[in-house]
Image 1 (cartoon, rainbow, N blue to C red):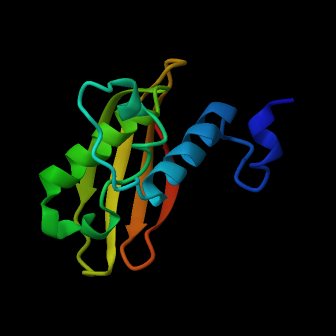
Image 2 (spheres, rainbow, N blue to C red):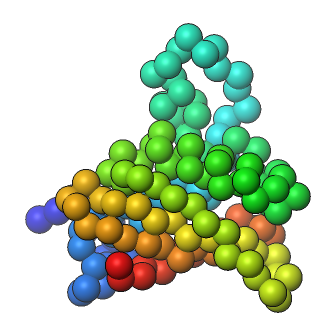
Length: 137
């Protein structure tokens, strides 16, 4: 029995691998968390990938006002630091014509098992909740 299945029964669908389920769970936790407001010395390399840096640095500024390039760069850096099972990570903003209080974006890349994947994601700015849907690639 896979350990993660114990906690993710409601998230697992029959066409989704355990690896994808686990990655989605980790990404959701990462992007819904706010990192501690600590300045870490750049010489403490391992600390940059620890609980002291887990989460979005300034969750209140995570919006379109920071610019699309900065947003995608910060999300990509977070994923590269904390989700090593995804290679060649790409983040693309999806323009939302409804002007709702959400940021729509895709997370795509290659999994360590060779499978390509894409997650259509929606980050709600008002409560910083994240929803993700698989897209078969």
